[in-house]
Length: 444
Image (cartoon, rainbow, N blue to C red; front, side):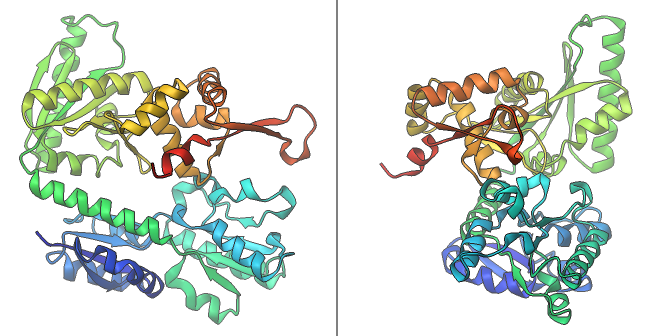
């Protein structure tokens, strides 16, 4: 089975991607498509929609531009994340050229609060920090934001506030050349692009082989105090069933609806679940049901080789969704927990590797929490974390986060150090360096 992927990208990313093409050639065929301007993004998508299994866009803005003109793309679409930049490598190269390099004279347009400023604040002091964009994350990838970023680069350069621009706007390099702005294009790392593409290939392969895998969607109210057969509960369940039926008719999904106690279940297929959740990146079904019903709800998703397995997994993920309270989760037929549904949703093995199980016993922390800590450090691009940062990421109390990190440190899975932030008076902040991750990464 040959998988074909269309890469809609700037010329820079195309040349960069070709460095890993030989590693992917056994798994897929890549068609390179020009995304250097907006018209070509749309025309190439339309021309190759029937010829590829999926599209990859070299940036979020390209994908969002497509959605402005094509509401529901027929083929799966993915994009390289701006957080995949090796910023430490770029800074190291600059230091090799000039050991006294002034990083405060740089504007980095891809470092934002949402991606923890690409770890830059962890390696530079306050007086050394470069300029960051102040565009809110929700607006970051709009065309208006793209124009605003270019305006920032030009104004800061012309005013002498910066001497270098670091950018992820690969299709706007001519702008920097025309305005004589020294720039470095921040490429995604080759490892990231390889692993990202292989995950897409795996997902497509699964969907081709698993067209008959069943999926269960369970819906229940947040309020568990309502009696199961009370008039309010019966009316609420009927309303949810009606909304699910209308949703399925509107979107063209094949739902089989039934009610069990306080639960309403929609039984469908994995291929529909992928579309409903935008490959587990969107909790739009929950938002739709809550908006239309006026109820606060919890959704649990499960997949299985039969209805019983799908229903059992959905029930388990429903418990997790209730416990976590941060969105919907899915327990898959092959034992993976995915969630909460958003652009940064994580996948965890409920059957962890033997190495992780051994580490869990040594550190006295359950394997799922260790997986989540590892995912958190990958997102931050740093193995150094704080209790409050972990608490916010895991949606747990600060006390619980402190307890987990203390256990890891006491069992020699982390080292701690203290540092005054911004040279402010008072008690210094405690940082944990997750040294156990290096042990997991190293070969046996």
